[in-house]
Length: 131
Figure 1 (cartoon, one colour):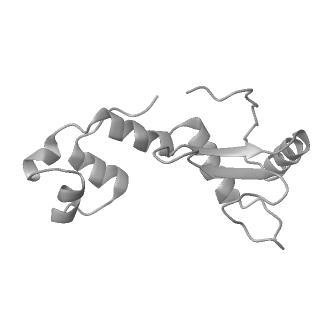
Figure 2 (cartoon, helix red, strand yellow; figure 1 turned 60 degrees about the vertical axis):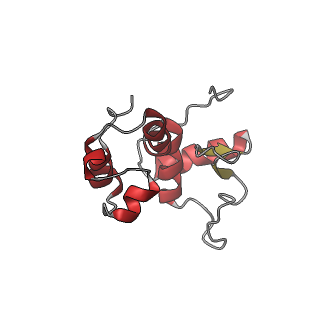
């Protein structure tokens, strides 16, 4: 479950850490300081949450943080060499984050590495992503 939809002020202060200035007001089509105390539009909040709190986003961020790739081959946006791909949105307007194993061997090796690092994480395969 995502956190409750905040006001714009709470969003900036507690979630993004961005300074509230005239530029921010203009970017988000907020007319004045009073608009900051209005509840955000739900679709904007849901988009933010899907990239921060959704299980697929949490997995994406955690796997990137662990830097699982071969130390001889630096990390890249294309993923963990020979095993894990990292996706930032499948098309324009989609900000979903996913990590995908290329084959069963990569999944097995990833689980072994997660266990070795004592992360407490367990891979649970899905057959199909549901929108």
